[in-house]
Image (cartoon, rainbow, N blue to C red; front, side, top):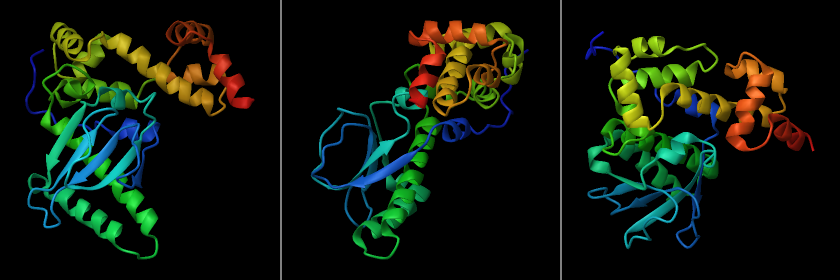
Length: 255
């Protein structure tokens, strides 16, 4: 099968937004930011205004800083957050929709209208989402999850795994979803993601499993829900990945 250039794009962020809670909180410029953040800089007229998505420990305060937004997107367990480049900057003049959202956000920052805090937080979440879109749409030169999500064909296999983790996927099915030959798919996936498709699928299943266990679901239910044929096989894979059995999380969550 040859690579197709006419297939449409799938929603590459939906599974992450459904599986991990995104929240964004406006902080003052004097506060320290230990986690990822959005940094809005520039003149009020928006001429050279920009938004930077910055990971912990990268960069410092800008002289034209206007506001900083702390991001929580289940940062320690979300593979998307682990894959974000250290710093991504978008000029607002090059992103009209993002510019309009930023303008509405800054208007709330400077105002005192009722519901201001809720409006700020919601608009900040929208800006985070738009910045993630920018990272995907721009593509990245370094291998990683974002490079794979930006690939015109490979992202379809990733989205298939993200959206339907419990399906008994085969390499042939995933390659077919990406409109690629088996060899091309395996080679491209390994080059961009860094692991084989099946290793990635197992890691994704186990990531989701941890969340379900913390929510109080039984080991047997979680195993079936994320695509393992038996609770025993799930427990073995979980223990190898995290160094403790899945029951340990269930016990902790019920303590």
